[in-house]
Length: 331
Image (cartoon, rainbow, N blue to C red):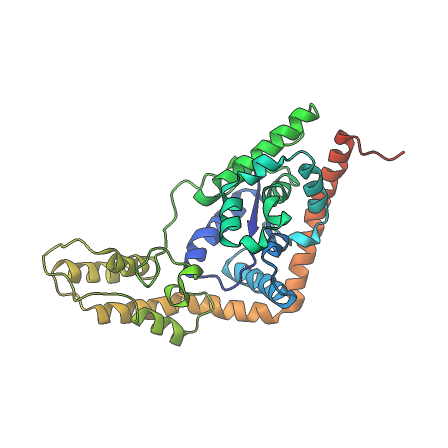
């Protein structure tokens, strides 16, 4: 059984793209692996959130992932700041991380360009904290997207360097987690591409959206006057609607609207109404679970407390061994 570690950004208000992306990945991973999922509240400090926003986002994203199916009986779920061993390993890794290689990391260079007044040390050493999060549990696999491939290579670099410097093979060299079949990429509603917060609130369908909001957003989705030729290729913004239909509607519904489009009889108003109806049926149970969990602070506290205990049990052994390997020993 592989040990897999993955972080959850405490952004709160997950959208449908998150659900069919990260969450679906996590649900499949927890069934077959020894998984550690942590909410990365320390990582988020690089953007200087207010204390209220930080705590509220951690609570919200925890409730959302649990409502979506993350199971504390199958995986270890904890908050990064509840495991102080992570920051100790972060310090130790920083002693063997070099300024030049950290400055060359693409994500650091992009952040430095986009926020020149906030180029902080946390941004620079982000890769070593990320490495600490992973190797504290001696992970063998890490799920990564295309935008995180360089971060995984940095983790592998720091791991190899530690093993080489101290003539040991203590830390496994983590490999990317292979999910097999690619997941569905959920498009946005404005025709601009993938669903995401950065594109504006009207682009995304959130797991906390009420039925009225869902319907309003879908009815505003970009369309045109319809096809003028039999079996005409769909423009991207029209294909987006059919992709969304495909993830929440049955085959009969999808086939009906495909046939209507291919024969130039499509009525986008009808398609949107059906899509809204099926989307509400999909999102509403999740929204209700999220609302219930958000109010159940006793249960949320129990989940993260038990997760921290399990994570610390594993992490404390890693730190004890790492100190011994490095030579930080008690007299």
